[in-house]
Image (cartoon, rainbow, N blue to C red; front, side, top):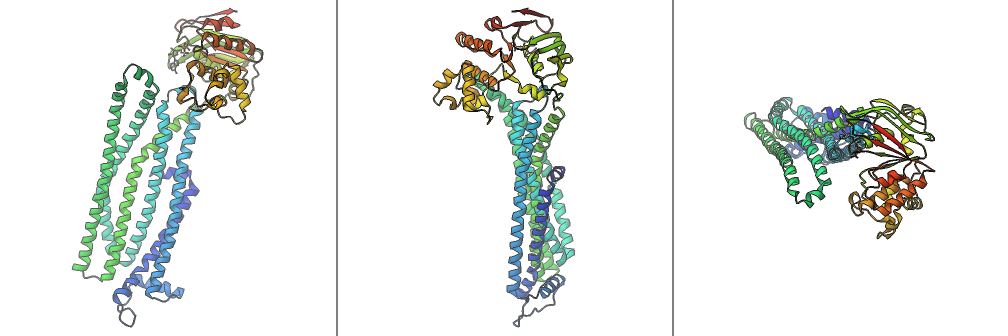
Length: 571
Ligand SMILES: Nc1ncnc2c1ncn2[C@@H]1O[C@H](COP(=O)(O)OP(=O)(O)OP(=O)(O)O)[C@@H](O)[C@H]1O
């Protein structure tokens, strides 16, 4: 229920229109239904002169009064027309309401997806890194869809509830005593079957938890298929996933069983109550047949809709946990939004300075008392053993991480005063692991920016020493690079990534072991390019490679984090 209230609050207009359409469709249904009793009386009780043999009851009198007021004669034809017209109205209004529900459900899924993606993208880097990719994929694909399904089920339950109300109201007018008795019977049946809803809810929660875990493992496994296959260890992936898949299967089976049991059990109980009621009314109380028939129809339909309300509610409970899981992930991402600093736009004319920096990951100290100068228009390289904190320094310079203590300045201006977005727009970044998008070379360099022309991409590829091999690809710059760039060699991927970093004419080019996969010839060409680029930009490179260090203006050597020590050689 809280889910529906939440979504009604988020989409007030759409929800109001839906409820309005449902209300009027209910009224139309009630009107058509009310005309049925006089019609039945005409059919069952009419004497040859065409007038009713028995005096009209309260319900018929009401309908007869309305017809007299509208100047419509009480004939079988008029009543049948009234029923058809009311049914048409009801169908049209129900269609409008259901269309509204469908549209809103689609919007719910889309909005939730966009919201969570936006909040994740804007969250602090350290938080983002701790989110498994599979969990995020699951949130965006499965949980958002299940949340929309839950809304759809909740809204459909409301539709059925209004219809159940209409039938019950008509039944109350015919005989309030019979209706009251039936309602008590209905509530008992609903209460008895509620444990099946609780089972479904638990199974739904389990499904949500297991899907997160399964998708996280699945994504990890899929990313490391090559070593698994190369060492004939595929069965380990099977084993890892089998356990969770089996548990998921169990939860799904419990869900299916609970909803099947509700379906058949509930219908059976309703039919038994109706049959008993009809026997009581006709066999023992000798009530009028037309009235009993009308009561059986209205209360039978009322039960039917009441049952449907519970079935839709059960379905909603099955998916509801996905909505709350998504909302929770979104809330945490929102709480972890990164601060984008001040308003000053940097120019990078003097350089970047890190002073007395201390940084630790969850208590694990990586840098302490660390100093570094990155002069503008020079090439600075960071060298040092694995794990000494080189990538961490780069993340600090980009502002993805913030130091625990110490200060970073750009052209003597503290980092806190810098507009972080403007700063990052000045950066060209080539990461340690080059993962390309499953798209063309062109798209991988421009990243889909419509303002970047093909000629600019070609120029960047030439600058990165990639043009020769790109030209030879079957469709040149338009060739698809495959999943994660799998159709290119490691060195080719690196050159495409360098072109991507250069395309926006950055002021600071950061290379995190970006030439590690290149052959000596390609590397020499890239280094020559980098030398030439110093006129236009500042370069900060991490390397284990002596050629790049030899070409650098400044080389910083880092010691392992346990004994932080910095030595600076001027080249
Ligand atoms: N997100 C993280 N969470 C926790 N610890 C981390 C994280 N990233 C890095 N570390 C730890 O911080 C230390 C420095 O890592 P960093 O990646 O900066 O080293 P590096 O010098 O770039 O290493 P390499 O040359 O192997 O890439 C390592 O001990 C690493 O385990």
